[in-house]
Image (cartoon, rainbow, N blue to C red; front, side):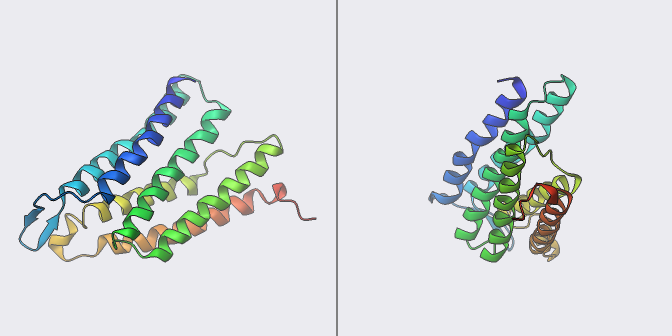
Length: 191
C-alpha cells in the first residue's frame, strides 16, 4: 500500500461525507445574491468534492514520479473515480439538479467499462485510463461542480453552463465507453 494508493483510498472515504452534506437537510439560511441562492451544504459538498477529485491527479502524479505504479493502483483509481462520480450523480438526481437519464447513461458506462476491466484482468491484462477516459472524467467533474454550485458564476450571466456541461458529459461518456470497447474488442468473448 504505497502513498499513491493511500491517496486514492482517501478519495473513497470522502464519498460518504459528500453524500451526507448533500442529502441531509440543515436549517441554515442559504447564501443569496440577487436571484442566486445556494445552501451552505452545497458549498461544503462542492469543496469536499473538489478536494476528492483533485486527489485523482495527485495520486497518479505521485505514482508516476516515484515509479510506484501498481496493478492495485490501476484498478483502485478508476474504482474510486466511479464511486465518487456515481454517488454525487445520484445525489444530484435526488436534489432535482440533474436529469436521471444523464446519471443512468454515465453510471451505465462506468459499469460496462468496469466489466471490461474485469475481463481484461482475467486475461492477465490491466486497462489503463485512455485519453478519452481522462477527458470524460474532466468533463464530468466540471459538470458536477457547476451543478453543485447552482451554475455559479454563469447564473449571473443567465448562461446555462451547468446544463450544457451535463449534455456534454453524457456525450463524451458514451463515446469514451465506445472507445474502450472498440480498442479492447479482442478481450470480449464472442462464443
